[in-house]
Image (cartoon, rainbow, N blue to C red; front, side, top):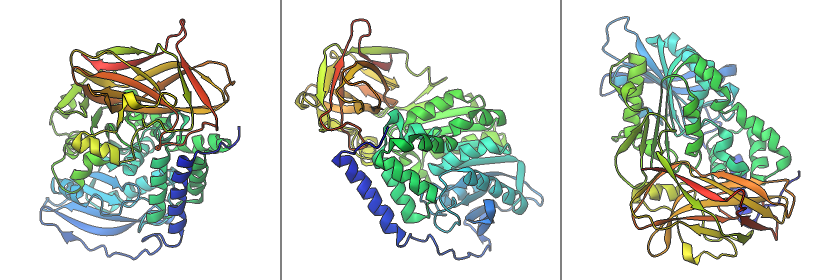
Length: 532
């Protein structure tokens, strides 16, 4: 298989990323000037002190760090430890506010800039082996230079820091508790789900990396191949991603037995919730899973500023329970906690699989013939913006379902529901496709449709296929992104499939056509998980 041509919209995304990358090669902000900061301790307004230090990382590189230490304790007192690697492209001060709060409550807290970013040395390895080794080096330094308790070590972080924390728990058995907020368990399923490049998300990450740090030659090559849609490099990219996925190291994580808390947003533009939920179900130690409305890191962003925040409050309770031994009841609560995107309080469940109590089926009975390469108007929105609007204003991406051009979109609708329908979990689409070309990309959408025909996006997902025989039908199964959404009484659900979405690269050759059919022996359908 060779390299597939990108459509103009996809090319535009890649060009924007390339411009960011090229421009920053001239002068990445703060990337090469590494001024030493004195390590003198400064007393905070409450019960802790802070000092800024350089910690030797793997290979002797410098990791710029800040260390918060409780004050006022008796001589010889040992404190539990929380290590906080920074998020992708974020500076050393990212966790200063929550770190001080933790220190004031009796933790030694070490936040450090991940390698390759800002004032830390080295290059961006994207949670590779050197990043994992850095985490252990920070723990070594903390035990040698602070009043840390070697038996009470935890790691926590947002986004990139969450991924590094999970990976470190696989390779360092000293880590007893992890809180991973807006992170990933499977990097492939996060940015290449359905074998489709999440172009806007990846372009954003690549551009931010070059603006604030020094990407390694390996990362630069991976980004180039990924955003160009070069299938000849697919196996190499999959191996690169698997090495950096906590799910790959699940057996080691379970063997070490750290208590792991996962939190994410339903609309995370970088790390969709499905891969976190799948990983959670396979953990065998103490565990907790929380999903809320929002986009990447928006559910916990307020806590970074010191504002009241449920995610950080639960994270502190989790650390208190498994590092301090506090009997605060978090281990006796239902371990899966969800909040619907459409409002209401928290819902607790004993497991992810227990979230839906039944399903509703939407038959895809009528055959639909679609011309590829043109945007029908149905899409997943824009990276970050759409899910943030959904979080704060409950305005998801919308489309007028009756006005969608049937030449470019297949549309099916359910009956009107007489009562509120609580969608909970992963919607699944099964259909049969006949393509005129050997490759193609399909985007599936589920909409909440009101009386006027305006559809609000409930969920969506992409799927790309290669190597099919033109004119020969083949089955297709798509898991849409998990969500919690309440469809009002009197509304119906609509299923839409098309071939272009600005969030992704698409692999539909010019002139491609797709037919969606429903054979008698294998009927096409969408299965919607609901809480009844």
